[in-house]
Length: 289
Image (cartoon, rainbow, N blue to C red; front, side, top):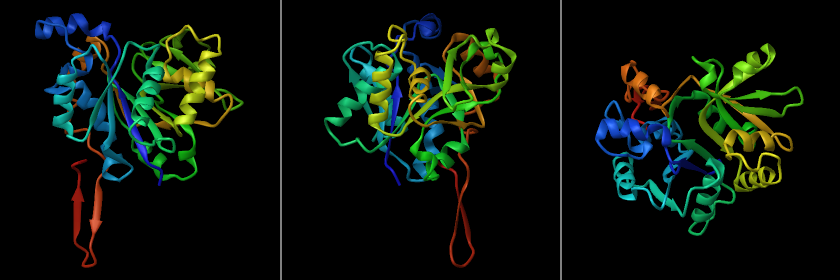
């Protein structure tokens, strides 16, 4: 089984949430440190990966939270300590060109201390939460795990508020940001919506995607992973992984709706694991740790 690292990108400016945090806390708070139902958004963003940890596919010591050097590193480390003390916080020097560049800069820093060349790179942003049983199945499938992938939802409320990808007839993907309603009926029917989770087969795949981006007409845009993977899909295999459900948590409106919703941190349970001994006694595990 391939080893995996999880990069949680938390190095953006979080402009959409600044006024919300000022109103709630009386000061500006980094978006991943904002609370939803008594849990930090950083906790909500890592929770979907507990099934991979329980299954031995991912280890807490290979979970990295990436911030800028001018962010509140102490507070981030305190939250990581609550989740699991083995999670590491990495600071990059400055705001990057986008999430993909942030991920790449983090990987280069990690590579200075451990060899991750053959690791699968799993990426999550810090303003979504979701459940994807198929993500676990993806990593267990020796054929599919060789692909680069998006985690997606087939249907969402307010589709004009979501990033999306559309699979073309030749197998490549086209990506877009919050403009699906301007597309054709056929494109809208084929769209899959992004929940902030992406998979790169290895570091070379991420590096190749960054190079394609830098040499494309998109080089002056923000380097969203959806765009990087869409460029990669023109030269290598890219897949999509369907998810059970997902929720965006990146805007004040989304957070207010989530607070009013029935979503609960403990309710987002991983698939149950059953252990049966030779006498037929069944034990059930749901802790995700």
